[in-house]
Length: 123
Image (cartoon, rainbow, N blue to C red; front, side, top):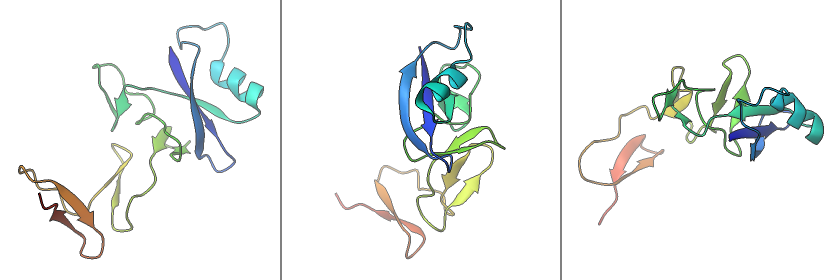
């Protein structure tokens, strides 16, 4: 089983479907689905996140595509929307990193863009 992402004219993911397995080489399935829908289509890997394959396989297109992600052809990567103006793009993971590392203690935190800092969620 493989997953395929459909893209709009700005390379934004509009839908992700389950499709023909990538080992089925009877067609170029990206092209086939794209022609069928009249919309660009790119295969995506459910097991890829932050340029790492969860099952120790080969990462594919940096991240699993989700609605709203952008497909960057020059990086051959799916990139999520930037969550905050202060966050920095990480070229190796194709994710956005906070400018300050999240604390690693037992507390829960949320990002406060006004102060560009992590704030403890009261329990």
